[in-house]
Length: 428
Image (tube, rainbow, N blue to C red; front, side, top):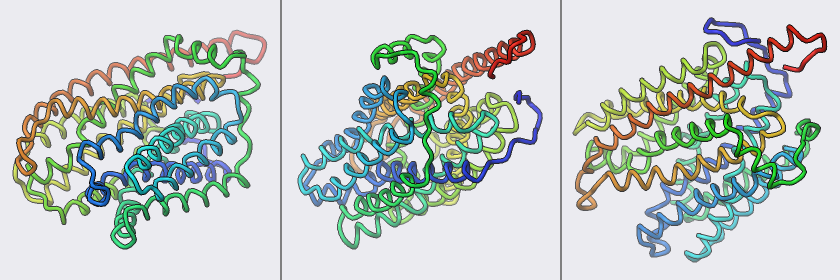
């Protein structure tokens, strides 16, 4: 079905497709929660292990950079195995790393645990994306991406408050044990209920993993997709590390109000994502991405110039910010999933996920060079400058996603012509 700017009736999901979406959403929920829960546990963890802020920061970044390196190392092998087996293998490693975090008693044990968790957990998103691209046509992917992105909101609404409650009652290790236990249940269901996903093995041409990795990287269209993903991550993650400090020190939000702020933003994500997913399947994905990007630009400029304002206004601006950020992610991820051929999807998604992780790490570093805080309680300075930097990155990402959209439309047009002109049926 060719995508147009008009509203269209889209194909319904089969019961098995619904099961796969729910299962993948649960895997993403556990992986995202494992990463997200580190920041709320920061104060408790630093006091428990006598860590400095820089040591804790390294513990957080160890996950991101190990996940990024893992993505590149596994890219060459990602299309050489049944995707179900690949998912189960890395999910087992993620569970082991998370369990290790729950039993860590020293700083070096914690660093090792975070590296192990990053190596395995950082690849989970790319495997899930490859499975979605294999099992769902483009006309359904917006809804699938919207539902899977709800894991981000669910981790804020359910995971983080429950994790903090457990940490306050039984220590900072208990949230990791909870995540490992939930992940084990999801793993068992996946083993017995998920069907093999191996059609891509029939179209493999590269015998060497390194050759397969090289062929994926040298593809010009793929490189445009990689660049688009990197800039999306730069724009999306640059403000996140400083959000709490800006809210407390510049906007007058209290520590007691912070959980409410996160929870309201998370609830808004749960509401917004299904709507954006449906819209992404009904209208042109690039148009939706562009509208969301200009929405985000307006909100970023306003938010980064705020001063002491009522708490309800801060919550409203955070919800609007979340709308802009997440509404860009759904259509852009759906478009990126169309770029690779079936034989390259695993490698493409692995590299894409790797660049996303690494770009997020660099985004935090760039933000740290722009934003200044004289003391631990003084307002953040140059946060408005950071906002303008993000505006420039968002504008550049619009151009890159336009290139991706143009490549996809050109490819669909070529295949349609082949079907019309060729006497032999051609798979589209």
